[in-house]
Length: 496
Image 1 (cartoon, rainbow, N blue to C red):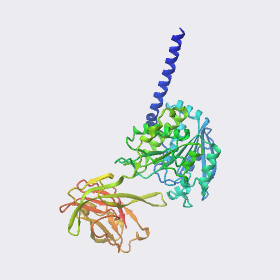
Image 2: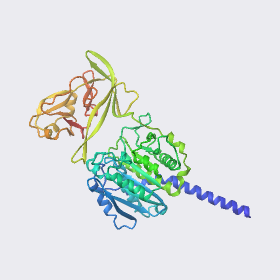
Image 3: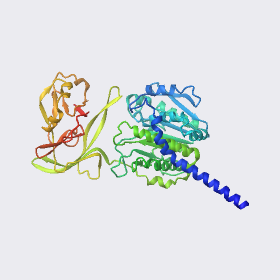
Image 4: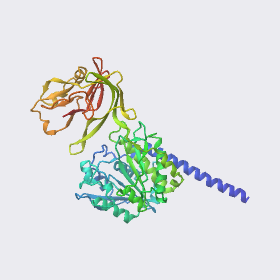
């Protein structure tokens, strides 16, 4: 009888463990599906400022779920606030936007707050366990002065993530003070990275990249850093379902000035997360959803300690970030110079230019490489085999203003090989400097010469691709227009 009871007890324990594991494995998928329900609808674009999130913090004042406190001020005197939620023994410090132009995780944080306030949606048990076993400390938008200008660095011109040792910025002093005061068991250093990093040597953009920061030059692994690796391994498994092959990791070379490296050295298990690019998601709303799911899934593994089941060696199986992707690659174009012909590829990137007090941007695109680019990839590619690249012509009529240009039949001009139009000298756009137009043409101001010769390295990416005498494609400011399948919608023209 004792043997039977013992076997039954073992069976029940095993069944409970398997059931718990199955529920844990299913959690990320459920979180992914429910994100739209809890998405903070006031944050729809990534160029927001502190004034946009202050009401979201203020409305939680008095909610017993939270404790909200002022923890310092930025260089320009903006208030830095920390939001505490949960009562558990495991302390987790999460900070976002220490670089002012890296806001994806800030958006996801407010989605997480909305989720934690939910009920009767099938997640009540998860919330209860999470908030009973962990205490979460969020510092959203640690660099509000940088966010005001949508710039990486603080108002002092210092990269805060290289200020952990010297601490010349008040924001860095605040963060170090919180680490000293709270002594968090875990930390999440939440960033954005260039959308042109690749996951290893591949055509796939690194949508999410991780780093288990190193606390010394020898890259040693103690239990603190090992847990970072295990957490990342678990998060990678979750993300592969949604962005297969698009997760990468940074080289773990030690940076003695970096907050991640130092927080790890100070005894907190630190995970650095970088939100990169995802084709068709310029405002990073899909990547925001991935952050929401992945961070909550990681917190679940911290709460139930299941992260210890992950193998740290699997961390090194994640490919390193690479620099193998351009926004656009034109391949095998025939170039004619000095009476000779040869083939060349063009690597083109679309760079953001801020306007309207940094709340909006337009693209200004350059040819950043020229020649044999067969090891590189493009998020968008054109095979120009059999096509000749040429500089477009300047249309002979001069226009008074951009409004007149917008009324032109752009397709008709492009088919004739005209990529440039010119404004009159009294145009009111001169004071704007570099600017944009939604008409797919390259607009020149009075006196501005069109580029001469064959389009090449360093030029603005405006040119045509011809088959014989027929223009097949026009590339205006780095955006491709197929003249046989032309869409008359919004363009990305440029005014120089």
